[in-house]
Image: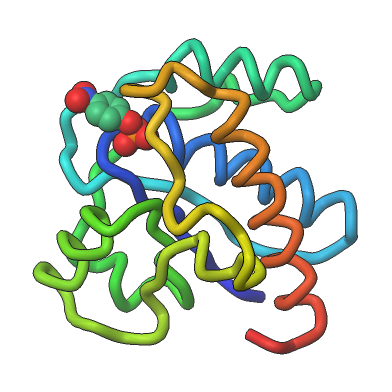
Length: 152
Ligand code: 4NP
C-alpha cells in the first residue's frame, strides 16, 4: 500500500484539499492508500483547514472534520513513498531540507503536457477555491489511475 503526503506552504488550503479529494477518489475506485498532508511552514499547526477548502469538501459530501494542520517533519522523508508539492516554492523548500529525489514532485507534473497549469494557484491569495479544486481533482484522478496501474 502506497503512502502519500501532499505538501503546501500553510497546510490549510491546497494540500488538505488534495488529501481529502485523493482519499475520496481512492475509496471510490477501491484502491487502498495511506494519504495525509502537511505544510512547509508550520504557521497553522493545530488549526482546522481554511473555510474555503472546507466549503469545497462539504459541497462534495466529503467529511473533513478530523483534519488538523501540521508541519512536515524530518521522518516524513523516509516514511512516505511520495511527497507531492503544489508549487515551485514548496519544491525548493523540500529539496533544500531533504534532497532532489523522484519521490518528491509537483502535483501538476501529472497533468498532460498541454495543460495550462504548472503549479496549483494558492487560494489563500487568489480566493479561487474552485479553480484549485478543479486542478487538484484532475491531478488526483491521474494519480490514482497511475497507482492502480502500478505505474508508480
Ligand atoms: P496553503 O495556503 O499553502 O495552500 O495552505 C496558504 C495558507 C496560509 C498562508 C499562506 C498560504 N499564510 O500566509 O498564512
